[in-house]
Length: 490
Image (tube, rainbow, N blue to C red):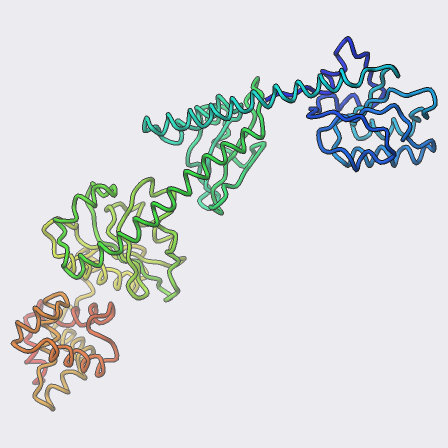
């Protein structure tokens, strides 16, 4: 909102003001006016003020005058008006030259200049500008609210806010180096192509990577306080979005756990997947670091390129598992965001009738193969995954002995059934009660057997590593038609 400028004051015919120095700074805006005849006016005024004096506080020595003026300039004052009395020292050339060098307006008027009238002109202009600013602020919030209620996206809202604020606006993610949303003015003027060249680049509080780029619209009157309110509106929105995304990740972890434990069926959770934007073909993906580094997945659910999508994400050991759309670009983006050397294993398509633990196992196996090959993406049952099964009976026997050897030896020496217990346990997707029932043993007996297997192998059958290795060994024997008992007898 435009206030009165020094040039505007000089143009008022009733004031009789004339520039004697610093006319290049005539565009400066004046927010308030003070009469000050003290020797230290800089202690009593502030940025944007107009200082008016009859001169008794002005030093007489030219060097002291320069120092006096510099202190006023450094206080942020917009201009100085001299209406010198008959006993006041004249402004010397060094003082006026210093004002011109700093483009600081110095104006003179008659000694009988009515300071009250001049101050009233400044104050009335300031009050009117503030009144218009308040009206514009109210319009900003009203327009934003109406656009939200109408279901308009942020790009449309930025266009509406551009008209009121006088700024071209675009929102960009500095981490990704991409523009997320842009108003129509920003698109037309090319600001959306190079947001870092904007006149103003403001960080949105609460997010270290979101930036609002703003440049004045030609012919409009941009107002920085209004821009601050635009930043406030966007900050509130993205903080709300962040909190909602955190809630969705938490509930997604709970859904994932329920699906894995089979206390929830895929068919029961399907409507929720659709509400989360998972409306097309979905898969289970497993992301793991080749080097074993910790995955930085704490904010992956907040990435702006998800664009409203809320996948189910859950940590299991050193891996990140997710129910996500079967989209190569999305799988790649998630991998890049969680680790420098993260690879991705992808299951077959998840359907409402799928066995969720089986689909998770597929993703883990594909992820293990991706780590082995150091391949960015491996899909279950593609050529790369199939090749992880041994191709000859001798290789199968070697694999089974390498993985299950200690358990086989223990069974042989003690006439126990640990290998069979592992096979049944994996075949029932780690379900304790169902496995114990199939083996006709008490559930606690099965727990004892699995603990013994963990002791012999150095890893738990139910762990990611245990599930992958044990299932691979047992499934390889099954695919090759080799009986585990035959291997035991070997």
